[in-house]
Length: 313
Image (cartoon, rainbow, N blue to C red):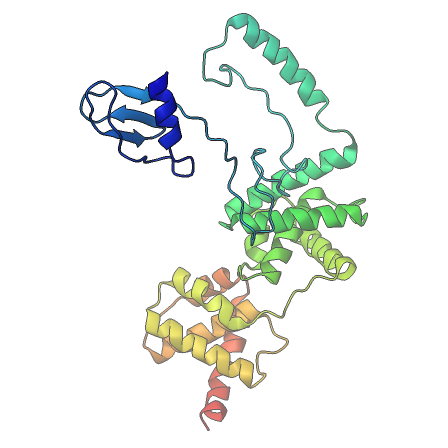
């Protein structure tokens, strides 16, 4: 008892990994503390183990967020913001196998939990929309932030009473396209339509309604933003891609590309750059990647080719 009192008097509460060297009560060896366990380095005698850390979670004055240990953060990507309860199947919280009787009981509880999962039809529609947004975001290889923003925009559209009479799948695809328009994710409407579960007309109508009613801060798209994707799809060299971006920038500065379809104009710039570098490409394939017709690509190609002399001068 006297030995413990002597040790606790010399232990540094602020540093949990080392103490001042004292003699071991058994062999007069050196004491050390490692991972909360104090022992003798010579004979291995454990003086104290499993010291309780009463300092609590670390907080920082310059950080405004609340760092309480209360589980996963709240997310907009789920209809209940991630606060729902999930009932397991075959194992408990510690990973132990459940008996057949408990599995049957959990099955009945899971069934009733599923029936009472949504409090209203609006909440059920929100869950369906968030699930569709997650699927589209995964198919388009977008980031987690884009999914959060699209889900928040879908909530705003539902709160503004824009969903009645319109397709939930169309609004989910429209919110993803709206987030791509408002962020640095360059995705064409054709790419969104290709992975959506509704026609192009419904998605266009839903995006127009969102843009008009919610006032989306969607900046005008520039043709140079679509050139890297087209160049990668057509497998052109980097110097040709840089030349196409230069043509697109010159056209934007000269206001030649104002009011035209940005992916189609980018395809025209890329075709001119490939012609200047002696690279043969299939115009139909380029038009398909830009989601336009070959006639549109040829028209923009001629516009860029005719305007090059004015830009050089």
